[in-house]
Image 1 (cartoon, rainbow, N blue to C red):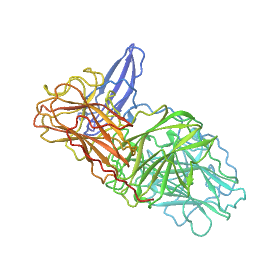
Image 2: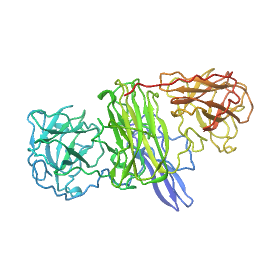
Image 3: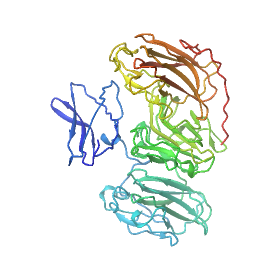
Image 4: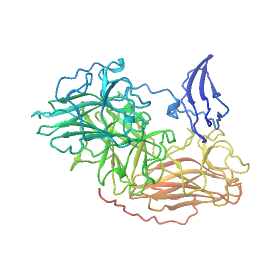
Length: 639
């Protein structure tokens, strides 16, 4: 969809003459082929119409290619082409109208000004009160929190058009006396816009402002969010809210309904099942019921899109849409010091004897630290942290360290939960600025996870495998029936044994040349047992110019070179044969499947039905001599 006058592309379902639009995308999408998909649910016969609508001028070409129907449901892609989700809005507690804010030196609903708060005279610009939307488009709230969508209420905000990048605005409460029972600062905030900067909260007990007790950076979605912060000082104090303007005009930050209570904060989590199990972060964390830990970690995860601010680290696109506008969650290591950690946690899920967590993660850069995942039990509505030592979480159900390359990797974790639980994602910073870590497309559901790395390609995707983004010459492709060239390649797949079944192959005809390489990467695997694992797969090598099929084991992190563990190259005719190879590793590793082009176009190589088993096996049909696999123990520096 290219051109400044581009119109609209729609996918329409027709049942008994009734039309329903399932997917629709408008305006220019750039000079690239983009991927789209949508689930079609229907009990009766139906038709699908692909409809292109002409735009406002001649620069409005729309094209489609490679249409495929699969038998499984799928997430709508890109996210903006499908209807908005209908699940609960994005707060820990539901947003309510007509909130009553009691009087107090730091309490305010901003309906009649800024109460006992004063503007800081040493900052760069001031907070304002308003009702309805802010003057800038695509940023700020549409209404206050106190009175909700009625639009009659007022709130406090910073107008980005009044300031320059990194300018600061602060307001200070009147003096607040401490309480022997403990105190809790509650407030609602709104941070919506592509250029959102930072909101900090301070508890100031002297002349100097001190360090923030709470901070948020980046857009948090177009929703009012709530936070509760324990106040532990025994001295008189002032509450200070500080907004730091972001890099552009879409950076309005708002506050409402500030209340300081003379009692400890109570932990509040949604009831199990309130939010969905899936989260792609396209609408931020709040739509999915995810929250930043504000008391026990050191900094926050950020909502990102496109590349991160530091070169040679972090993703360049999200995983959901594969575009630079899609969203993901990440940490920016250049802004933090070694050993600091950030926790992002889910809402509560009900107990289950069989549970699966699946997610995608990105760990690229020379200074990448740890990504850990923990399952946190919940006692009633009050979360109970997992076992901790020296203030740190322990016993992760998933842990990965170091540079895994510039690609999204898949993870699947099966576990049992005897009580309601939450999932914690922990990122720990290593020593250096090139250590950004990202996550996307989290799915938590009842049932067992499929075995990691296994794939029969029947859903017309690569499962958890990915084509290499660098270091090879072309990609593996999905196909069915015969390949483009006659006299080479399979006529049926292995899984179904039919022309409709799907397999993976390399096309060796022009422009490919001798020894061109296509590499397919698995997700990272955890260390094997002492007996190892067994990788099995079916391959097809038919044609007079067959090259080679190779299997490598890549020990992680990225700095360790892959080791060739299996190789075969022979014209075996139009038949599927099984290969297998033992995998033994005392630390994390990846598997790389490489196809090498032979001396001509009659050299298509195909793969199907990749499986792993936790048992020893010998190498099968490999033309390599027996390789002694040396076992190294990788001990990363302790953080």
